[in-house]
Amino acid sequence: MLKELHIKNFALIDEFRIEFQPGLNVLTGETGAGKSIIISALDLALGGRAGLECIREGEDSANVEALFLLNGKADLKALAERLGVSAEEDELIIKRTVSRSGKNKVFLNGSLAPLSALSEIGDRLADIHGQHQHQALFQSENHLRFLDAFGGLEPDCEEVRKLESLYRELKKQAERKEEKKRERARRKDQLNYEITEIQRAGLAPDEEETLLVEMKKLRNSEKIHEAVGNAYKGLYDSDDSALDILKQAHGGLSSAVEMDPGLASTLETSNSIIIQLDELSSGLRDYLGGIESNPEKLQEMEDRMAEIKSLKRKYGATIEEVLEYLEKAESEFAGLESEDEFSEKLEKELEEMEGKIQGKAEQLAADREKASKKFSSVITKELKDLNMDKVDFKVDFLYEPEEGGPFAFKGGQVKLNPHGFGRVEFLFSSNPGESPKPLSRIASGGEISRVMLALKNILPGSADVPTLVFDEVDTGIGGKVAEKVGEKLMKISRGRQVLCITHLPQIAGMAEAHYSIEKSFSGGRTKIAIRGLSKEERVDEIARMSGGSVITEATRRHAKEMIKG
Image 1 (cartoon, rainbow, N blue to C red):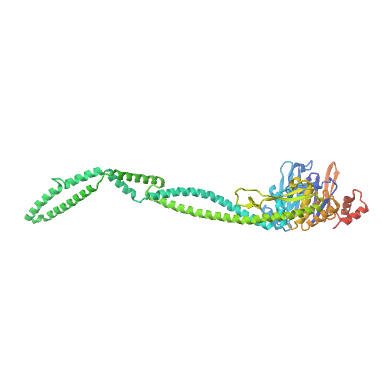
Image 2: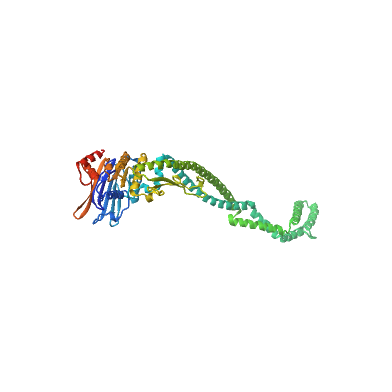
C-alpha cells in the first residue's frame, strides 16, 4: 500500500508530504483545487509519462517520492529482487526526478534504476483509474485476465500457458531438427553415392600392383615372345642347339669314364645340366604357348586402372585409403540414420503435445464463452446500480485464423497464443440505439472508473494490485447511487487500499481517512496543499460538500450522520 507521498516543485505544488492509511482514503476539495494534479504526481512515481510541463514554473526540476509498504507480499518482493532492488525492510521507496536539462532519474530504494524497471513494478503496486493513463481497462490484453478471474479459469489458463510454452520450445527444436534433417538428407545422398561407387568397384588391397604387372606383360607380349622364342630355339629347337651340343659332349665323356673312372663326377654334372636344360626348354615352350596378344583384355585392364585412379583422386592416395574412407562413410551414414530416428521421435512428441493442447485450449475457450454470458450479465447489473441504466456491455471473442495450422476451434484453424485460443475485448455502449464498441475507444473517464469499480466488486479474490486509485468515479451520479458507489468502494477497500477523489459527501462519509486539497495564492504564486482532516474538520468538509460555502448547524448535523467511521 501507499504509505507516504512526497511531492516537490510539481505543477502548482511547491512541496508537501502526506501519509495515507489502509482502507478507503478520500481526497476532496473545491473544483479546480488541484486534486487530479496529486494523482498525476502519483502516476509519475509509478512510471507514467514525464513531460517538462510537470515542472513548477521557475524551477529546474520536479521530484516525486512514494513509499510503498509491501506487507509481506512474496510476489512483490520477488519482483523487486528480480529487478535488482533489495526489499529486506518490506518497503519500496520510489523517487522520480524530472529535469529541464533532460537528465531524468529513477531511484528504487536509493539505487539508480531504469524506467522500464519502475514501469514493471509500478504496474503491480497501484492501478489508477480515471482520466490518467495507468488503467488496465484501456489494455484489451487484461480483459481476458478479468474474465478468467470471474470464471475461476485462472488455473486452466495457467496450465494452457505452461503447455504452450513447452510446445513453443518443442516447435523451435523441431524446426531446428527439420533444417538439420534436410542437411542430413543432402549428406546421406552424397554418402550413399560415394559408398555405392566404392562398393561397386570391389577393390582389393593389392589389385593395383597386380594390374600394373599384367598390363606391362600384355603391352610387351611380342617382344617377350621373340626373346623367349630365341632362347628356346638356341637351347633346344635348332640344328646346333645348346642341348644337342651338350649331349654330344656328354657322350664323349661317357667313353672317357670307361678309361678314367675319375671323370665320373664330371659326367654326373654333365647329366644334371642336360636334365636342367631339358626342363628349361620345356618351361620356355610352355611359356611361349601361353603368351597372347589380347588388346581387348589390355583395354579392360586400362579401364580398370582408370577407375581406380578416379576413386583415388576422390577418396584417398592409395586403395587402402579409399577403403578406409568407405568404412568411415558407412559409419557416418549409420549415425545419420539414428539421428533421423530421433527426429521422428521429436515429431511424434510434438504431435502428442498438439493433441493435448487442442483438448485443453478448446475446453478453456468453451468455458470462457460460457462464463462470458454470466460475466456480462453481472457487470451490467453492477453498472445499472451505479446509475448507468442504459448500458450495454458485452464480451467479444476474436479468434485469429491460421490456415493449415494444427489447432482448430469452431470448425476452423485458429492460432494458439500463451492464453489458449483467441483473445477477448470488452464492448460497451452507454447510449441506447448505439451498438457496443471497444471499451477503450468510447468510454469516458467516469465510465471507465465505474466499470473498474464494478469489476473490483465482483472480483474480490482476484490477484490484483494492493492500491487502487479512482478519479472521476462519481461523475454524473448522486443521491442513492452515490451511496451505492460508496458502499462498493468500502467493499473493495477491505484487504486493500483505495484512494478516491470525490465530490460527493455520501462517498466521503464512508472513508477511513479523509484528505482536503486546497489551492491558495501567496507571494504572486499559486500553491496547492493537502492535509489530513480530523473528525471535526471532516464534519465541516462534508457539510461544505453537502450545502455549499455556508455551513449551518443543519448541514453539520446531516454531515455527522453521513460519516460512517
